[in-house]
Image (cartoon, rainbow, N blue to C red):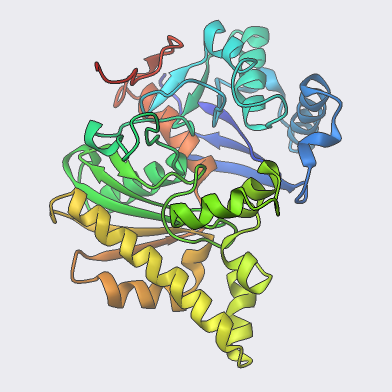
Length: 369
């Protein structure tokens, strides 16, 4: 493709819809719609109704900015509801489209991106891709086992933003991502701290199933026996306890806010318990980084901070003081998911990377035992 491609980027989350138009890697416009917390997907009778709402939203925004769907050279979505796959771009095929009806629950909006992008590709005869979907799995085998043979660790990471930040760091320092070792810390409502060894995310904490640091909304790693006693105490149903550990746990469970800015104001106002809670969260993040440094045998080229909490000067200062002996530290506050989707497609269209074929088979299928 001689001219820079015109790319439509769509990214669905549990509480927001993000839309972008890119000319190559340059954004012509981006827009984010916050749908509010709570049961946003349950507002719709089914996924068909939700998809109709989403398509109307996308097409209305494009029309307001003077674009038609037929204008685009390529459609790209974050993806969701696939089997575990390699990192990079995948051309959306019929098998992937069908899998969005099998995996990921009935109402999760993440699957809409794949479905809508595939629909546009069929209508306008243009390619559609996903890039660095949440189901990317690049773990080393030794990272998969736990102390129980019937429980295996799985790769659930903020893949899209982590990969984009890693590529940005490499470009800025005239390095090749696949030739360096990084620890990337995505710090938002959930926190993922990941070892990137020469382009592969070989180990990380599971942000869905309850590992790693306490975060603003997630309990993180908990002692097993007290959790089992709580589960069998009769105080909570299974769903209530799951909600408490992954949605209303962490900092929120302790001090009633999931906003680090508010927590820091509480500390400034003299709340000593808020201070120990926040410092404990910072401490746990640093400890997880140390674990990932061991994964990389101490050979770490840089530690990268990203996500909304990376905007906190207090957090960055704390982590820098704790961790700068391991490797140089660089901060990329906020998230770069729309840019990451566009950049991933540009790498494919330029020939720098090759898109994968989706087969519907997990990239890792278990051990022989």
